[in-house]
Amino acid sequence: MNLLLLEEADFIAADRAILRDRRLTHMQEVHRCVVGDSMRVGRIGGLMGSAEVLRLDADEAELRVVLDQQPPTKLPLTLVLALPRPKMLRRVFQTVAAMGVPRVVLVNSYRVEKSFWQTPFLEPEAIRAQLVLGLEQARDSVLPEIVIEKRFKPFVEDRLPAITEGTLGLVGHPGNYPPCPRGLDEPVTLAIGPEGGWIPYEIELLGKSGLQPVQLGDRILRVETAVTALLARLF
Image 1 (cartoon, helix red, strand yellow):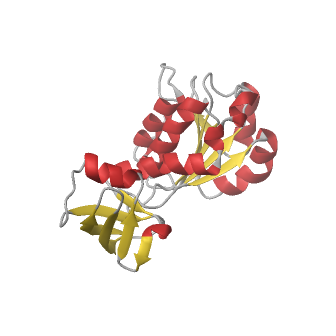
Image 2: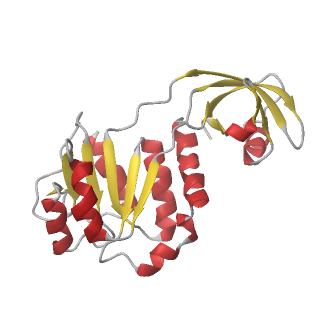
């Protein structure tokens, strides 16, 4: 945890917060905090700064908080992602939050198993928990927006064109396609498929909505690796 994130409910005054959960345990067991120590903090959805430990007991800590720093800038990106396997999904949530993705649209695909949509990891609180872990790692305080679209064709035909308007639309897909561009400074809409990739019909439909296929080479990557590799290359 490189940044201790504070919830609205933690504040007992404008500059005071009380912690009683896993963050308290982390302070005690990892940072080995004592009264008077200072640590980096951020208010979820707000500013970042520092906090002084005023009181540290076995069951709670009181902090004096100063928030005077803007969070890091997000990437100019909307990520359209075919729903990964549940265990991988948790890691992907952490990755996108840590790398500064502001918006993720989870979509269905022919190769996405129906059972994946039943996972408890798609519950709002479960999603939020993984995003918070990513923000803590990267020192950011603003949660990405997660949108769930279970019907591929209506989303791609009816809503994706408005998302891609004014952006560079790309589809990460193995094959005889142009290489993924590098070091962009323009807005991008990027679609990444499931393990096994998009089927030809999906590539065709995404293309009609303004997303052109690009590739990273001959190797087939796991979804979580492809997300990291494509984002690092693009930005």
